[in-house]
Image 1 (tube, helix red, strand yellow):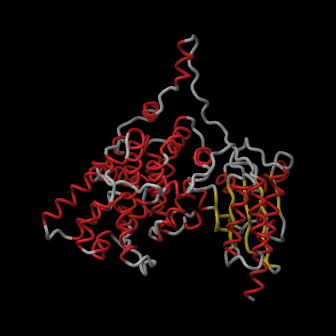
Image 2 (image 1 turned 135 degrees about the vertical axis):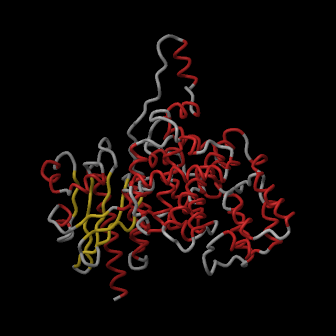
Length: 498
């Protein structure tokens, strides 16, 4: 798969997020009240990502650029910390949406904000159900989770429009389409932006799959996933699976959860109708299949297709459901390998593990890669670091039980690796646990157990995601090289600590 050159963070942040005219007018009305409570300012801020980002920026400036000593639990608290004079000036420091964006870029930004607020409202609602200590903190984290997409609509609208076309019209998997359009994943850019903008810690954690089992993070991730899926309809198998995970998260029945989520979507639409885009609640009356009509409205037939129709014969629709395989990037692989070799003994273990899975993904061209840690009681392997799995909350909970004999229990007996492929699948496939087969949804992968000082500590796993992408010997050998370097680095660091 060929990909675009990665867009830089400086390009993404060249212009700030704009503010909605509704937010400006709402602040003006509050100024006229003179004694308006701080809570009202917070409510306005939490419906406008541009205004929320400006609030966080002003808090950073007010602290002299120092890191926050404690997380902001609500925008009401943020407003109080800034003081009335600074708060009332917040909208004036932002560019109005009407001036900042036009045409497709404006429509895309409004659509993305509508989706972000829907996710935020759902996550906030679930936080109240679970009696969370700071529901507004969860709301803010869900609202800002997709900051990278918002920034792209402002600074690189053609790139993000291409991504939507690839995923919606051409039906490419989200992770692979992101590499074609952006040169890297949205979550990668999101993590970089979260660092640059000093977003709340919960935003950072929700952008890292390894935190997906943390209850507060799980709520944010599931809400974002749901909001993405229902943008085009509520009745797909993917939405049903997500609703099941939400029901599990809330410890409630599926029917009860579905009704509650539908009602929350309606309430979210009422809270922020000024966003100006089609709201998810409006999709509730549609029938399965109607979403394609809406996609066709956004992506009408290309001129070449129309011309073919005029010349005789039917216009051919774009090929959908195409398989996209990541291409290995030898230069990237060599660079990461050299960094790992140079870092043996100095790089921290977590950094070494992250470099290894990045090398597998970005360098070797493996679509999904992870390191799973062995539990203290040695009863299961749990994913600790992952890449290429951002759009799959189910896979992000990668876990392999070790209480029964199977392929992975054998791998953990001593340092060894395996590649499952056409040549040996008949011999080894029956040894793969059924729940792992269901989880990975592919029949080719490579894995290597990790032992330090003679003791098992974890397992590297990687695959090409699709049955149609060849997991060849060269890729497998690159995977093994990175595993071995990571083990050397971990062992060296362990000796230093000892």
